[in-house]
Image 1: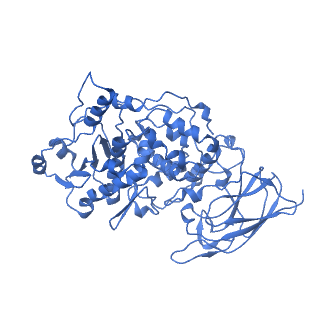
Image 2: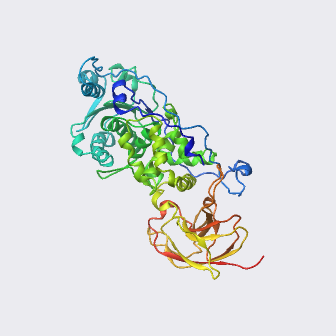
Image 3: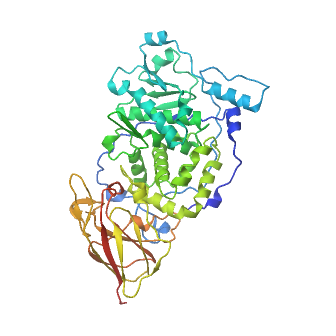
Length: 521
């Protein structure tokens, strides 16, 4: 695991420095739309990802996580193209506050648009309270309702960032939904000084995005760029690239149903989010032995997001950090320093999480190994115990909750010794379409990862991992109602039922598990 001591500390640029010297991010957002996930074909045996034995003396199986040895690097400075709106007024006198106010006013000034000329070019106008959209996409309910969606998102943004709703009462942005970009360039709505972008781009109080084949992904890109615009306007920045794009992906992923909008929504199925594909990115990258540690993601520079994969990883990082019980509090402090794009931003977060970092690191591994639509980060977080004791001579009985992931038994086990595990109880592993009662042997009409759903599993935790090794909790032993296990290494016995993290919330009940040490050689 990378040491926190390897991350150098540099002075913060500061909010005023950013405003006065225009160190403002111009991140091209998007990338080729990831296609909806399809059932994976069986992989050939010689292509199965493996961990190098030299990196994994405990013979744990699974693709290798590849940490980098480089310290978290500060994003390279960017020379920004001038805005198509009125330029900032140059002044050599006045107070510092005056200069800051002038910089703000110029940066977020709306452009003057010749609407007659624009309409003649076949570009229509859609108006909302907070957004005006110019588009050449034909009229359609899913297109024409976009201003309504955006207006509803504003209160979600103020709520998430804990701002007074009144702060954005008069906020307005212009957006350009383009099918034929040349049409927009011809009437001056697509400035030639914008950097190249694949799907979307935000600057000041404007953003541009290309039309998409799916209504969800079209809305998602609008909300993604809208998140950028909101953060720049009211947080005075978006932080380093991983946070900027992670928050835009996280808050842009949504549910829109019967006129109600939910942001920071974790789609439960790929059908809820066609063409989005962020879950698929993480699955595919991990399967190719390209799993990313959180510290790797924190090192993304301003050019990383010209590819699709960083969007998947940044979404995963933001979703995980915002929902994990060990990271949520620290993560939700980050908007207060969003104007800082230096390495201080991430280094300060790492320092605050240092005491819990081994547990966070392990839970992140489990997240990317098991990620799926609807992954429940809080319920999937490992339940550890501060005190672990030797198993009594007569054994002990523990209770395992069916609605949580891995749970510490609180008892240490020795390497090479054999333990008898006996489980009993009746619990529920689903509510719909009807309740599914289950016992420790699992339900054989439905399987997860090759084992019956709901089956009792065991693994050894609380061990010191090799830097590149994967937690043994990712490679459990099937127990069912009765099994003998002989740990290869000493540690704490952990127990869980076989269930996808996204399915834990509708489980109910507990199991009783008796643990006994067997005598013998």
